[in-house]
Image 1 (spheres, rainbow, N blue to C red):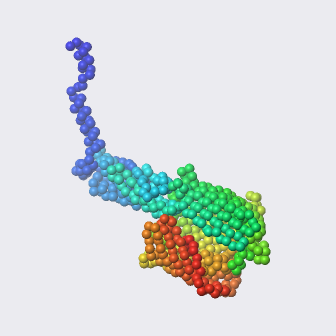
Image 2: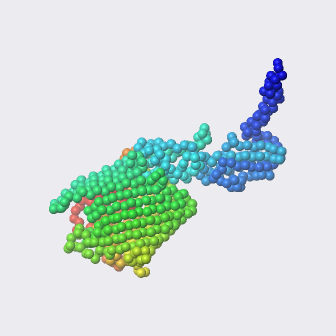
Image 3: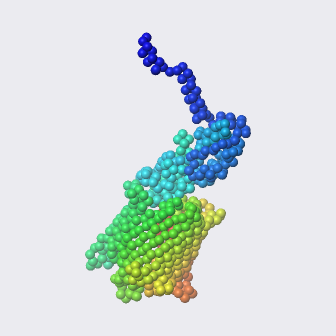
Length: 618
C-alpha cells in the first residue's frame, strides 16, 4: 500500500479508546437525568447528615415560590428527611385544593433529588392541573363552539372548581338550555384535565296566536313568534304581527321585529335592536352592552339610543279617567368598575342620561271621564351621576323554590347600593332636578329548609329641595320547603307613593295580577297598599316532558290614600289551581287558577273567576 493511502486510512479511523469513553459519558448522563426517583431518595436517605443546598420549584403559577416555601418544612440548610418531604407534598397539594385546583399534584416523574459534594440538590415540579380538552354532549341543535365559548374554563388554563360552578350557572341562564352539568376528570395518559359538558336543550321557537276578538265596533288578531337560538348560534329574534279593524276606519297592520346578538364578534359585547309599530306610534331601540359577565369581571358598560311612544293611563275605581301619549327620546350610557373578591365586592359607576319627553292628550278615554290635569309638562333633562353598590354573597343550589324542578342558583347574602344624578341647565336641561334611588336585598337560608328574601327599592325626583315624586317598594318573602317537594310560600309587600300629585306618573293599584287574585285588574287605586299572599304549593308528577303541581292560596290586600288608612276595608280572596311546567319549555311555570273574591262590591255570581298566567305571582 502506498504511503498516501495509509495516511488517508488513518485520518478516517477512530482511536480504540473513543467508543468506550463516549459510552461511559452517555451512560452517566442517562443515569443523571432518568434515574428513578425512589432510588435517589434511598441513596440520599442513607446519608442522614446530608444538608439541602438548593430547592428549585417549577410549574407553579397560582402560588409563588415564597408561598410554597412557607408551607414546606423541608428548607435549605436543613438535613434531608424523606418522610418530611412527602408531608410537604401533601401540604402543597392541600393548599392548591383549598384554592380550587382540585387536580394539582406533585409530578414525581420529574422530581429530582441529587447529591453533590457541597450538599443536596432538590428539584420539585408542580402540575397545577391544566385543562387539555373540552367536550359537549346533548347539544343536538346548539353548536358546540357556542356552548364552549360561554365557559369560564378554557383549554390551556389551570382548572378551578369555582370556575366550573360558575360556568354551570352561566349555562343555566341561557334560554336555549334547560339543564347544564359539567364533569371534570383527570386523564393520566395525557396528564391533563378533561372537561365534559352535558346539556339538555329547551324549545326555543315559541309561537303565540291570539284568536280574533270581535265586537260591534272593532276586532283584532295577534301573531307572535320568538326564537332565542337562531340556527344554534345563541342569537335571538322576535316577530310580532297585529291586525286591528275598527268601524269606519282603515285596517291597521302593525309589525314588530327585534334581533339580539349576545356575543358580537366573538366577544362579550351584547347587541340588541328592536323596532315596534303601535297604534299610538312607532318605537325603536339600539343598544350595546358589555356586562359583568362573571364574578371575575372588573369592567362593565352599556349604551343605548331609543325612541318610544307610549299611551299611559290614570285609573279611578277600575276605569281610566285620564290618558296621555308620551313621546320619549333617550340616550343613555354607563361604565362600571368592580373591586374585591368573588364573594365580597364593591362597584362604582359613572352614568349619563339625556332624554326629551313630550306629552299630548289621548283620544282613547271618553270626554265625560277625561281629566286633562293628569298630563305632565314637557321635559328635557340631561343627567350625569354616580352609582355605588356593595355585595357579599355566595351561591347555593336548590330546586322547587322559584321554579318547578330546575336547579336554581340562589345568592345567599346581601346586596345594597345607591344611584344619584343631577340635571344641569348648562348641559341643556330645561330645569334642575335630582334623581336619587336606593336598593337593598338580603337572602337567608336556615338549616330547616327555610328561605327568607327581603327586597326594598326607593326611587325619587327632587326639585329645589322638594320631593316631587317618589315610590317605595318593599317586600318580604318566606318559603318553607317541606316533604316531597311541598312548600309553603308567604309574601308581605307594600307600595307607597308620595310627592307632588301633579307630576307623579306612578300610580298604586290593587287587583288581579297586582296582588289580589279574583278581582278585576286595577280595580282599586290609592297612594299606598299592603298585600299579604299565602300559597301552598304541591308537586305531584315530574318527568322529562311534563311537571304537574297544584296551588291553594289566600290573598289579603288593603289600599288607601294619604291619611285615610282606616277609611277603606280590607279585600280578601281565596282559590286553588293547577301549575304546569316542562323542561322543554325551560321550566316556565303556567298557572290556571280559580279564585273567588270575598269583598268585591256588587258581585252576585257564585262561580269563581278563572285566570291563566305565566310565572309565579311571587
